[in-house]
Length: 216
Ligand SMILES: CC(C)(COP(=O)(O)OP(=O)(O)OC[C@H]1O[C@@H](n2cnc3c(N)ncnc32)[C@H](O)[C@@H]1OP(=O)(O)O)[C@@H](O)C(=O)NCCC(=O)NCCS
Image 1 (cartoon, protein in one colour):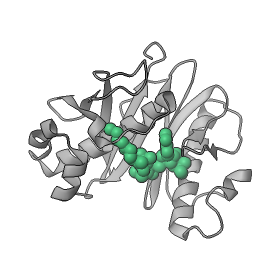
Image 2: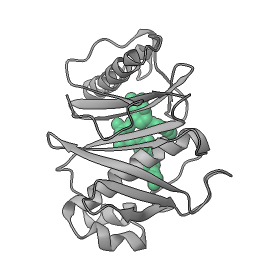
Image 3: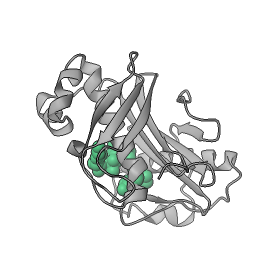
């Protein structure tokens, strides 16, 4: 099991490793019959982590279906986020009375990227920080994916890696503040900043973001 990231107490975190339990009800139909075994395992591990986290909040046990956007259709009154990488998955969940939205991303720490990938992920202003250490680029990538998953349910619009940039990094590199570079919604305009917390365990990096309910 992965160590819990530095999240507020009202957010539940769970991770899951093989073998995964069987998907619940209609979840089994989401991927389709032709999905690769590895994809089915990852999917089931993600759902298993989410179900366990929801159970800790006494949420009803119901299939976690997929919206056309790829978002999970969470039970009414709950929200969350799922991430998987081969062999492991994790999920964060919370009550919508306590958290507006959540985002999580999980990657192998050894997944280092090429210059081409750096060009796709980094804005001009980020290249300096990202090239300081081979791990910084991965941290930024992970943080940006967590930001996307956290904000998408609120803004309902795709935004790419160039649409947010590093505003600040804590001295120990475990909190990155990302700033939107374009308007996504009336509440999430260019300049909007979101902190992402990073944690490291068992060779994995986890990036997590939560949007407080008093922050639109
Ligand atoms: C959607 C995306 C972030 C998923 O990340 P990934 O590393 O490929 O895969 P992960 O395993 O970490 O996450 C997959 C999970 O993300 C969730 N997800 C997918 N689309 C989502 C969306 N629009 N909003 C919120 N969560 C979403 C799902 O739960 C999915 O798992 P599931 O299909 O088993 O339910 C990625 O594929 C993507 O499209 N990135 C481009 C957008 C982006 O990151 N922009 C950066 C902005 S600064």
